[in-house]
Image 1: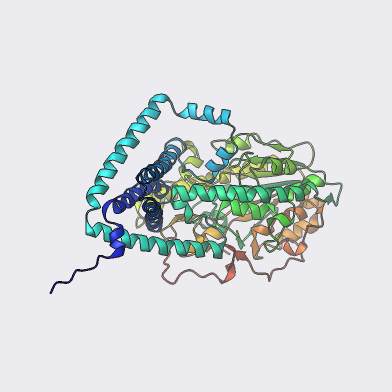
Image 2: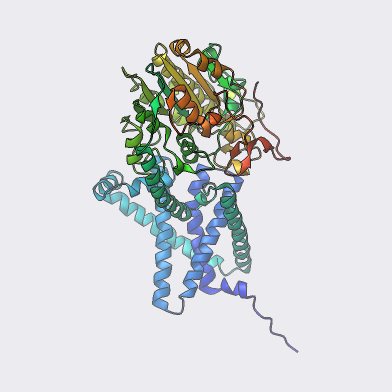
Length: 563
């Protein structure tokens, strides 16, 4: 008696053209996703690129199958999706080739804030007719090869089963991504792995922040503040980028990455805070928490941004930013209306090196607030300093570390050394004035302490502290100390307090002697009334002081900080 084996309905889906199309879409998604893998190389990134790419491909093939009853609509749907995936490929590789980055939030911000004339001029600058034809021919040839290969491979039962397993893995990883978003309040660490998901998420953020910016703008325009003294000091706020305390000479790093700041730390005017953390491991989130006077429990829109309070108190306010220009983007620093509400002056172009931007910094004849946002040690580290300023090389690191990693570490330490030079140049400009300078980094950076590099993945890191601990110091000029000995004493006695950078705005207000209903002495870590016992909440929900490295974590490099 013969029995007819019933076909597996799941495998049936991947038979004939359905499986071929799914595989074809998967290869296209992987092709664009490789750019993110180049940008952030790791096993986890590669796995997520493959999984999310397969999920998008599978969902797309399901759409095609749903309309397969009408042949013309089916063909049109397949072509439209293929064109969409190819556009994603072109966008990312265009960005990699011309701007050494990927199509991300910044690119979306520029596009949404660019008029048609500017867009056409931009396209003409980078794409000639010959280049367009070359790109078109290359894309067409690539698609033909991929489609033929998928038609051949799609006949294999092993390939079909592999696709099926990958789909299940993709669904599981996507579920994890959703939980990650709910818990940590950030979708930046995972959705970025797929170009289309990244672009969709960026558009969502842009639309959401438009409403947020309008609420903050209303707060800034109605800000109430006044100066408590006629003897107003200059206040200089310097925000670093990706500055790791574990590569900082001020915090015990074995190499001389910060000789100028280390020398200055013996001056009674400089106080180095030993236990400072950032609430976020991403620049946009960190900058919002720094500029907002509102507490995390109240939300970003509950209070003005601190420069608006200085402006309301009669200060001249200046911004030098080597990362964000006024463009209408998602950052509070890119919105044109918010910028006008906060600052009287801003630079209108970026500079290759921070030192070039700082050459434009000239102290005003009147007391002013200066906010300086550096490129600092932003990746790519080798681009942060000129070759003639190279101090460290691979030979300065242990031989048991892989040569490529030693090269990256040398670039990072050279970038840190360059930041040290830039910081000293700022202090020199204000040394003879009545001035307070505060420096901190937006977040930390992993430099292979646990075999990973970069930031933005602290929640998944073997030791989240690496990306969350930040350098922070305050320097008070001789004139400032003479005029305000009580504040100077409070600053120097606060070095060991546990602090978070989302309280920085209240410290800045106190240094400037600004009176406002929004100032809270319990959040100013140089105030005698500072609340040292409060929880330091990071990544939306985690208590920083309860974070422990993973049990399987074994640091490859020294991760101690000198007391």
